[in-house]
Image 1: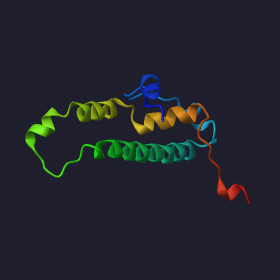
Image 2 (image 1 turned 180 degrees about the horizontal axis):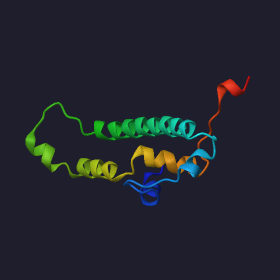
Image 3 (image 1 turned 120 degrees about the vertical axis):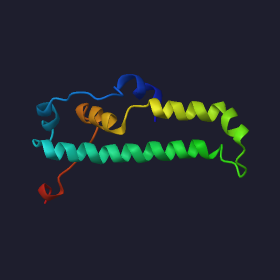
Image 4 (image 1 turned 120 degrees about the horizontal axis):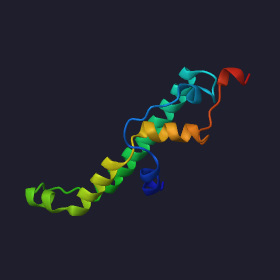
Length: 109
């Protein structure tokens, strides 16, 4: 996952969205929101797992207050993830770009 590219292209704050554009791929705004919400949860869990794996390297059995404040690399990793766009914004951008593939199981029969 190329996080640096996504950070610069996806807005990290609240953005007004065109509901007609959002509902166009599915034909229904609620179906579009469900697709975006599911993708957002996928992104969120992937990012959380990635962050936890990176921070696991810094886990120590002894909690020394000096070590906590002196670990700059851990702080930089945490700041990077805090500055990332929200998973919902990432999912909406993927949806608008047509990068999310979805299907309606009841219509495939």
